[in-house]
Image (cartoon, rainbow over the protein chains, first blue to last red):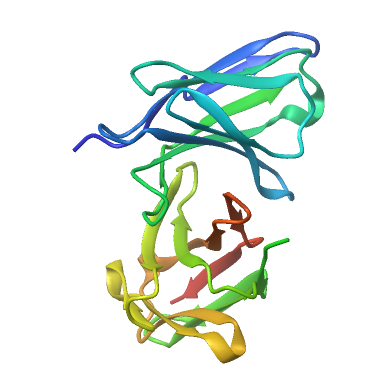
Length: 112
Length: 113
């Protein structure tokens, strides 16, 4: 089965710009999670979507937002980019609460 | 709040030696526990999971982990390290009350020839 796919793989932006990252979950998975992995800060939980609704949000400012589409794919939007937003953004999906999350290879975002 | 602690941000072992990566969680209710591995420029790959069925869990690539409730630990082991095991390893816990997966800070494993 196809795994979690993310696009693009790499992105370079400048401060103040906006970016959209995309994620397609494993077929049949309805929950999608977004994480930020910045150098030295580990994996930080960003957002959780399930059945099209935002279910939980990490400790990030409102300029981080997203949505989940009827086909369960998801977008992560980041407005007013700052240098500190440079990171690997990982998307994960899972089947249900007792099952593990499966991760994509991420989008590497660099802010100049 | 749920927290996961990985002791040792860097661990080095010789090829063929035992690998032991430590993980402790904080929760009054045993959560679901996972170990993931991350190779450079890749996402996280699931090694194994504990979901209360058996305390000794076997995973991929020869890894296993033992859940010890009395010690709130879920340490990862492999009897004989291989060069291909060099990567970063993350322990994670999911509890219903937290509604999210909480990761430890990761352990970078180096395998010496």
